[in-house]
Image (cartoon, rainbow, N blue to C red; front, side, top):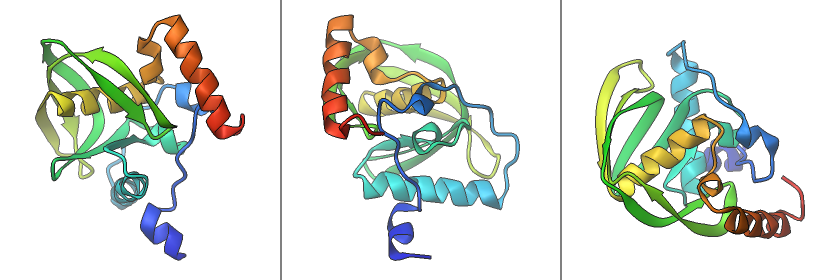
Length: 171
């Protein structure tokens, strides 16, 4: 294994406009050592890019898996479902698939999520404020939805142009 794989889990974060980012993911059905290793690699890739969260589709894997790390807490979301949400918040979001690009998005203030960890154990987790925002942002990736999808056409088109400049049209 190379030094780079140790640091970033050997996973490459896909950038917009890669069409893979808009594809819906499939539920995880097998909870095994391979899944646990993938989750570990997803965390490594997220940390290597100074992210707060990363979803499997962002590394080209169409399974309902996401990881989040915020305020010294780590979360594994596998086959997550929102079971309660309340309130509203408007805040800035960025995305590892849109490096250097940010926009304001309105989301619920609080969420309760039913999910599984990498061992297949069912969990109920709750998030408020930025944590709720991070949960929902990563869960959107699992459905092929991007944070720019919440924006007006004008703002979305401006971000698309900026993203294409950043990547030189390559993803």
